[in-house]
Length: 264
Image (cartoon, one colour):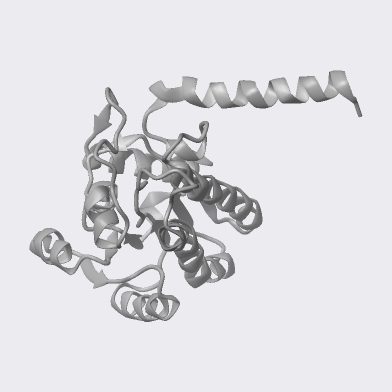
């Protein structure tokens, strides 16, 4: 997308971490940003003092009526949304599927997947009608690599966001609208606090030892460049390609086994 033509963006989970980095990167390009977040305190402390053309807006992305109200408020202030970033989410809780509280699983799906659909449902039709716009859906590198024990529910939702984004990209490309799946590695954020606040547990060691972490500002700049390039997948940590390649190799081997054993 030609960023210079964008006038208004809406970013969920925009008051901290990757979301805040994206907000700042878009604002630096002169784009008005509606910053939606469930954390009122973070909106007050991080967004309100920044001033400029930022509109802080409390939103629980699971609430479809809340989305419609947010859309009405945002577009009354800054006009149609040209860029939608479905970034709000929660992290893994450290439980295996056999031990996971079903309510915790349902929350994970609602926050990490259904909420993304809610944002798409609110804005994709208008972008298609206008013939322009871009949607970014935050997944994870764990939406591309092999699932990990005690992070299975998280991986499942992030894989689903990748699939949603790929299909949405195919649907909207003929209408001039771009779609990217953002697949970040470790980024400094409040994800663990958000996960607890939403009611799920957080493992004592939620981030693998030795993981390289980047700032939200650095990630935000990468996202904006990814929008400009209309990348299908926006990757923040290319050093982790090996983890993706491992999964691809297992899939390839399974196809080769199928060809040897029973063919077409």
